[in-house]
Image (cartoon, rainbow, N blue to C red):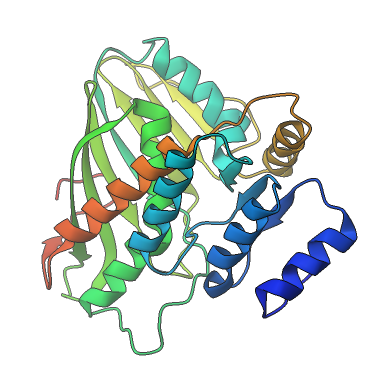
Length: 287
């Protein structure tokens, strides 16, 4: 682990001196784009924290360039939830049709401490745009991982009964029979409840620390046991990247998938609208 130098040339010299086989890039957003480009030029697989750039259009251009160039060193996003045992168990149940052929979902993203610009406030449209920019990638990729591609979406700022802007809501309809919403909270807000899947027959509730299968008679059964963000999740992520670097397994994310996710974040930003807001009727209520 080391801090990236300010100049790309110094970064390249450091990478070559350490004879790295792969690299994980995280930290300052302002450095991620050039670090990613330079890592690719050096032929090294990279796993990158998202957002990869403070400008979503620039991130999209990078993925498109890589896609057009053909085979590249692997470029993956840091997505620990893909390796969370409880979530993967729930995904298998969902794909097996055990919840029914259709349903709705609620996703409340755990709020990471990503700072908003100093000039932003919770009541300004830019605050909502920043939440989508910082967390929208995770939201859209998570939805696609569980339910397939997104057919349509609509985003807006959520307002509480007091009128203060608190969160961002994204209404999503997938190409299958599932639809629902994602709520993105402001930095600093942490909630235990994360995902609720309500099928036409049964339901699943995924939390940070525990998860449950709920049948049509409202009987709850513990699902898994580690929650969605235990240490095992991060260990699985690290091991999966090591396997990609060693070419033991293919990548779990292609440039085309990265580009599609960026396109959905762009669509969410476009639909946000200056000053547009819905009244928030609770974590599981309608908008």
